[in-house]
Every structure is written in C-alpha cells, then in structure tokens.
Length: 218
Image 1 (cartoon, rainbow, N blue to C red):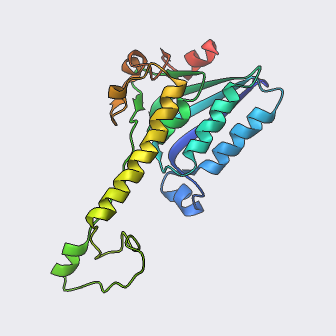
Image 2: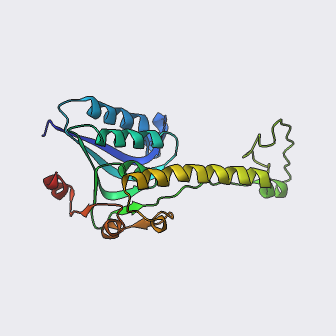
Image 3: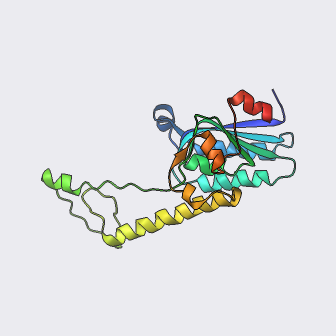
C-alpha cells in the first residue's frame, strides 16, 4: 500500500533464461525477471525504497554478478534505499545479491550465507566400462569435450576447472566485502548461519521476528 516502496521477490533456485518447465516443475526462477524489476524500481522516481524479499538457496553463477552490481548501483542513487530481508534461506548466489543492499535483516530461524563456489563433475567412465561401453573420442583442443560421459578429466582439465572456480569465488567474496567490509575470510568458507549469528558475523544488520516487524522498521 505504499507507492514509494517496491518489493522484488527473489525466490527459488536462480538461473538465467530458465525455461517454463524449469520454473513450473523444478522450483527455478529466471533471474531476467528479477533484474528487470530492480531496474524498473531504479528508474521510477516515485520509488524511494527497494526491498529484496529473499527466499533462495542460490543457483547458477551466470547473471548473478550483474544483478549484484545493479543492486549496488541503486544504493548509490540519491534518495533511494535498498533493504534485503529473509525469513527463509538467503544463500550462495542469493546472498551475493542480498549482500549488496544498504541493510540486511533476517529472522532468527532463517539461514544466511553459504559464501563459496563449486563445480561438480560426474565421471561415468568406470560405470561405462562395467557395462561394456567405451567412448571413442576425436577432438581438437586439449580441453575440448570435458564432461562427455566416458571421458575422464586430465590433470590439466582439473587445474583449469579449479582455476575457474577460484576466479568466480574471488568475484563473489570481493562483492561481499566491498559492500560489507567487516565480513571475515573465515565467514566465507561455504558455511551457513542462523539470523543472530549472521548479524554477529556482519552478514546481516539486524534480527526481526517477522515480515511485519521488518516493515515497521522500514
């Protein structure tokens, strides 16, 4: 009921260009809609307060740095304040976005954090051997075809993938510490925290009992 406040829900598993089936059946949210809504709030002169209502375990990396930067840019606009709130989960890619707000509030039983990055790779080569199946692979480029069933990773493949993970994780941790300067490296090791501990570790600014209590602060 407040024309000067915009609330943007950030729910579910976050992915860019998610399909209708992914959204309808798999709990995935297309982040293009989130980005568009934030941009609309940024452009609307009547909007003075932007609230990110977060309930997400995280998701894919693609597009998340850009949304985080967009949120941060709104905090730097004259006359606009960005709040983040969670009464559920705000983890990983979701926290990347939420951490860029001016202030972050969480309920006691919420889950906050999971600052870290991973890439999981399923090697099916042994299974295929036991089934009597073998991959015959022809390719150009020493890393081409990584991830094909039956093609084990080389040590060079592993080093490349680890370097990519560390690069992205560097973006993540830098974004968090640039917005929340008191967050320590020990807090950014992939673990999660309840609301009170999130405040103690400077991931959040306050604990509230409910959405209504949070709105009263706003």
